[in-house]
Image (cartoon, rainbow over all chains, first blue to last red; front, side):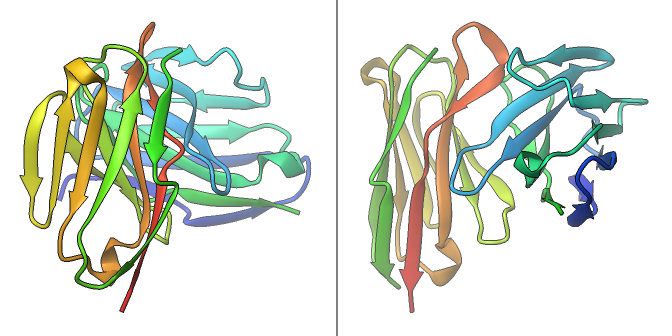
Length: 113
Length: 110
């Protein structure tokens, strides 16, 4: 089945130690998104790619970066994780702009020690 | 930006009961999506429903765009329906950003 896959499901890192989360998709969608979701809150958009065109949300900290080496894969890099970055990170895709359905991966729960 | 309000914030159901969740939004939209987040964190897209009514098994949704609201109906609820239900609409000035409501937490008891 076509889907959005995130690895790992759980990730533990140390304060200040760089960490990379990965996402792949078999839907062949043009747009890939990264969301951050903290407990009891709605998902918050960090940035998105339309093909290789990167779009950062204005309130996304510089500590968060992303790479999309090809259509299928997208990575979230957190350069120096702080305790406040502990959250669920959700990857999502859509065929085009959001006049299309949004499909989420199962998420990576990040803990920062 | 566009405001999205969901009600009720919490809902406890006995298995087999029916319920209605509501989503109000503050501006005209050209689409609306409903999501279910299960207790393991997975967000499932239930409906893409800019207007009208759609059905998916025991779930159905109705959007009345002119009156700026959408309803999600759960019939014959099951314990697997537990989780958080979010509605979301596109931001007015950003075609790639959804504005989410705060969600309705549904607990279905056996």
